[in-house]
Length: 449
Image (tube, rainbow, N blue to C red):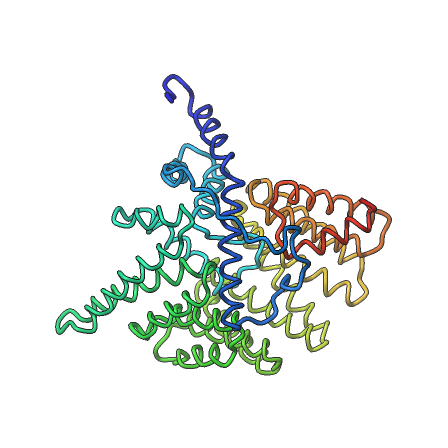
């Protein structure tokens, strides 16, 4: 095919149209990877009950999932070129990047209220994917993943990592450099396997910590995976081992307290959770005061406030919760206003509106609840427009509309109808997540569909 004589907009339109035909394959490909990870966790009996785990099975229950068809060999090359093409709009480049990650089974939920630990993890995972694609020596691994053979891909990566690890342990000179290279190889495996195979990712992060005990973030990732798998004792042990004030930066120290607060809250120890979150907030406030221009430092304060608000809700102190949430909301407004193009800042602001709305409802202020949820809805529609291929946004919007419908006002049925229409579109395009099947079926029955 020749593009000679065509304008850049026409060329981009043609390419994106061709790529659009791959979307269904890529979504199916990602779903298979996610199911694989869930199956592995279940077989090892490590997982706690997860949201959606008890949802009704899909209609083809009992039939094994069919493997995804092989993708065109040039898919990643085309997508990578589009991601790096500065002549395209930000929306087009982000759409291409989203599809590129889908090819590799990487799923990053833009609707999640990413905390500092989560945000750093997402950035690290994106970087690991991009490094793999850019490494000319790793193209066979990329092809394995494209073909759906993640087992072969990870085996290749693990062989490389073990060779580097063995060389580091045997070397008499330049040991530190060799250990760093081996740690980096295992870190890449952990990041790539994070959403695909939790057990493999956890083992990889443990290797990183053994080779480089000063890598605080590998420790945090390992603790998070252990917690996800239901091993809270192991998660706490990871974090407590790394919690040495003289060995880590202030921000890392805050992140470790944040992680320990999450573990304590999962254990039901709200007092301990509050103590860790307060420690984290104190450090975050000091860091923000020392660098008022730092958006990330201010955002860390906002996240710590939200976590303290969550604990206050669990303790029944709604007045304290509302205070924490509203202070966080004001920070979110300022961050969004200072960088309107930042999708993450807008997303954080939407989530803050949701929290303020929830606590307002629970204190009897229904008008404030609706006002905040409508502002959340406005932001969600804006972000969905920026990322139209991502199925997480229609679901997000549907959930907010159902929250508004639950207020029982005159437009309740209209809100339910709009929520149902969004979910039905996901059903029609085979993109409805299993966890949402019960919500969809309930709406369908409620509306008499």
